[in-house]
Length: 423
Image 1: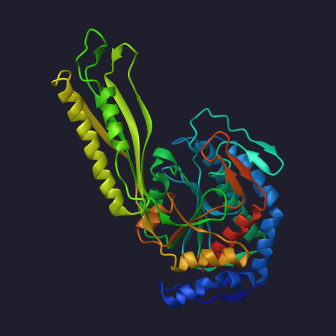
Image 2: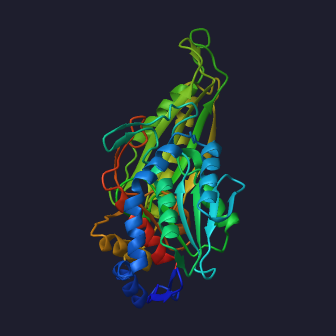
């Protein structure tokens, strides 16, 4: 990032700058980019447009949120976003092989290429009532903040740039990704970096949820589906057979006793369990889904090893308890592998995010989390996740709520960051 040059044209202002490698000079330029952008009349007009248009953007947020997008079944919402991207004049609008929606806003040149994204999917299963209700400034509905807000912000940024006729030096690809939540395992953003846009992404921004936070630390995770299996039988007549549910209980008890560091924060959770056929049957299968997390790769690796040891020990103990009668087997499947990492707080992309936040008279705390930015951060590509403004309660619950009070600030901040990074 370097000095901004303002190049006037008949009806358009082009914001252009040379792209430099991270350096003290680049950091200094990034730290003042917000003030310099706000001093540009066309940019100031675009920021004003975000405030003026926010009521309409909130309607877009509600419209998209009332189209269900359960895990692995985001197609209906994707189709709606594709139509919206087309109506906003984006180029080469498409849905890729895994379901991401992409639309391009060309700059005066191809590079730097910024990807500006939000995720389509929710945590809620197919058939969930996704109708929203509103009371004053508060909208209630599953996914209304996470991440219907992010999708709405993308639309708000594009609309404001169009109205103010802003042209960037680099191109911006706006993306609605799939697979950010749950067992989606970031499949959408992984596809972007590994196939769809491989080698073509210079900077990446994800807009996720409500508030004004700036996530620069990517919390990595490993997720397992663990199943203990055996012949099963009658609870009385076949008593003495090894029991998959008892083995599962042993494993859960061992997981619960693991010791993890407080710093770096490292966590474990057994999130789902299942198995068995009736109260008077020895189960033939019992399963659980386990989530392991840490922002530190070494801590995550150590926790992963301890969990695998616990799974194996539970199997051994249950089989030995019953003298190998009805011997159990263990089926362990890795169902999620999110890489972790960190973008230093002093890096140009984080300095830019802080700068544009401050230029609006706001504060954005630096934070950590698991988002689409995990993938580029792990690849060493400058990336950041920003909140979308407003505030939220009950995220990931049926009672999820989004407070629209001053939510335009999130759209305005996202706009400034897009302009700062596409030059």
